[in-house]
Each structure stands twice: as structure tokens, then as C-alpha cells.
Length: 116
Image 1 (cartoon, helix red, strand yellow):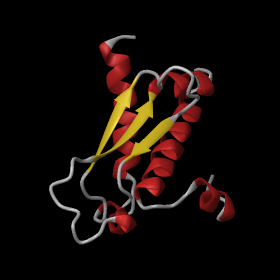
Image 2 (cartoon, rainbow, N blue to C red):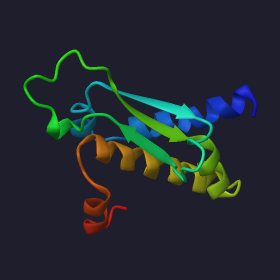
Image 3 (cartoon, rainbow, N blue to C red):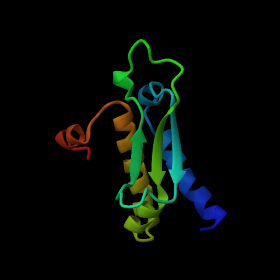
Image 4 (spheres, rainbow, N blue to C red):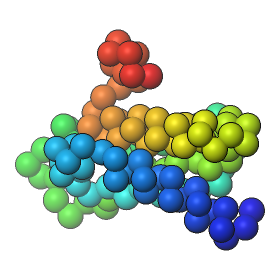
């Protein structure tokens, strides 16, 4: 993969973050969004949230390392089959999905509200 291809993928992630409603993006705190090529071996993931969800942070939540949202480029590109529109949609959906986890929304709740 070239540096240009990596930059183009990261731009898709940045665009998805820029498209967040202001009321959501203003609430995101102490979270880093990163891009990696592949998930850990044996884990069929498109993205991963690691950290303490926003709604579960108590009064002693201070000085903590940032939460981390990782978006995995390889699986998303393969899933999109070379179609730039499908890739943009898949990246956006994955970013939003992981941000939902940052706010404490479970996979089951996402299914319940038809957002999975």
C-alpha cells in the first residue's frame, strides 16, 4: 500500500468524524481515533473501541489514558470490493459504530434501534 492510499483512507475516517453532529462531537472526550492495517490475528473486526465508555466515567475519572477507537483498513477495503462509494459508506458506518460504543451503546442496543 502506498502512502497516498494510506492517506486517502485516513481522510475517509477524518471525513466521518467531521460529519458527526456538533452535539455528539462536543461530548467526545479523551478518545483517540487511529487507523491500523489489520485487526489482531483471528479477530474478524472492522473497528474496535477500547476504554471506559463516556456514560460510565465516574467522579474519579481523571488523568486516564485516552480511550482508543481503531479502524481497520484491510477488512474494510476488502469488504468494499474496490468500490469507493461502498468504502466511504463502510468507513463512516464503522466510525459511527465505534463512537456509539464510546458513549456506552452496546451492540444489542444498536440492533434494537436498527443502527447495526
